[in-house]
Image (tube, rainbow, N blue to C red):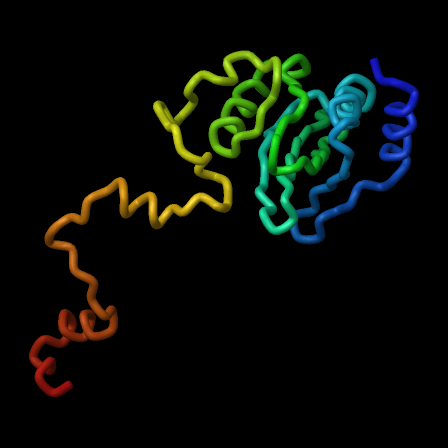
Length: 181
């Protein structure tokens, strides 16, 4: 149950108009991390947003935060609402929502593996999800160097050559004129 402070914050967010993204037409509301689960619970139980569409994270390394986005759907009004929560990149934990929607545990496992975000109490959180045996930095963090990882992990394959696209196409399309270039 929400505390009096949480209820005030929930009411303030509820009274404010969600920000509408002009490009997508989706509405988003920004909530503090300690208020997020209470707010999402209210959306589900009172406001009719009964479906968790997806749950994801964005790494804003420049601001030292992860932005979690919970996209929920209200079938009665046919509206989606994104609940955005900023959490620090270091010592990253967020309260679990698997008690609201069981399939949220899957999203939380993915975010733990790909970004290193911990959701204490979420079932199966430490089980491998996609990256069996992965021990390095989570690969969706922006400081992860994909080029370096590829160079260290995969061997160069013989027979691969890089061509100048324009010259290569001229040579293939007009072989008799190749000498005149």
